[in-house]
Length: 463
Image (cartoon, rainbow, N blue to C red; front, side, top):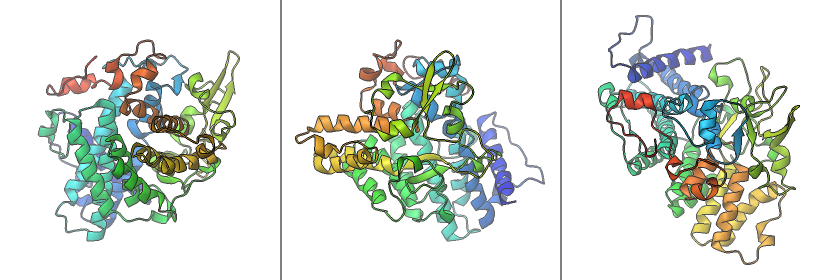
């Protein structure tokens, strides 16, 4: 009954979102529908509205983990995975030749802005709201702010300057210009700092499905790493790493289990409203009976040492009549309606060690950076760097950190694609493996439909 009610609340919010994206028409709600005002008049319904946004993240394109997601499309844009089917939408991302009418690209953009619209709606309804408890109001504001920041992080990294939409005002949003990415990042940091202040440090009933202050700190650490604010990146990642009562590195085969102690934030497949209990990542990547649509590249496979436990535990093999494929096998369940055993991983502790290692290396703290990196290498059955390199340079260490990021974080939220871009290595790495690579491929195109609807939007160079 609770799940049904949350879905009902979500439908109301989604209706509002759809109205914001189409013609600006005033629509009266039928008498038997819960209006957004009514939703935010009680603790229970307000809380359900925010839970509904989390649930929706399993379903919408950019965050679903399926072939329309940042995980799949960002992965194809880099050099870790490749498409094995003749799907033009996928191949355009793999070849870095994305047409402005690519429906998957449109899906990323529109689903991200729909998510932002829902977060904005929550924030507006909670502003000066005296009908729900102050404690709950702070929490919901913190969660909505976190979700908005999280979504803008991907928009600004995939598209560059993007419209910074902070209200639900239809008229102004319809004609909004692109905002300089520096200003977008400033808003991301502002939202995340508010989330850190407003959110507690615990999880509901042990389920790591809603943001807490550590979730916001983990994303802040990543944001500051991308902005080269090394001290802040080290500070926020350390806050998460030091919360050892909540987080720890677990054996490789346990990382992607539901509520793994390595998880900082996960998305539940059950929350998406389906009868299936498998993750979308499992459904997409695991090759069983038929070939599947995504395989690992040879260059990625050869980046591993043969003794690396990740090669054994996180890579699967499928033999067909024509050839053999190696596929991502971090998730073990392709299809299931049994009790849930895996959740989609969004943020996890291993990334925080990698963030801190890089931030420390950039500050010249090489011994401390090596200690962080060796945490992951030892878990992966690799020799510690401390034993192998007696006199390592800063540049060599940073190269090793990038290599470990490639091997540790593959098929997780486009990390490899974003890493190559932020470190100015995309052209160096991809020009030799992508026949049509150009420097202007660093950002995805603004979708054709968005340009048509809003004449104030401009296209990225090269499209």
